[in-house]
Image (cartoon, rainbow, N blue to C red):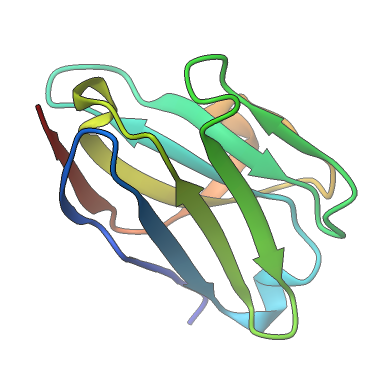
Length: 124
């Protein structure tokens, strides 16, 4: 069964760092762009970052640009989100998702497989 499993969330102080990981099934991972989204209770899911299937291109939300870095290791079927200089407003549940396409997009409708999410909490 194809699935995505996130890990690495937790509680961190403002200014700190966390690294999220998303382990994926090989069939879906090697041919698809991958993305990270986040969502707070009662709010819509928000795009965070995406990477193309071959890592040639990346895209970031303005709110995280310069602080977050998305990367992938196709040999390990894993995508990462390195989060630095974290702020309390970064507190959310973070989801990994597989895109229908190989290229980067930021619309959630383009992503057809989602992980279960991992909680990130940044204290002030």
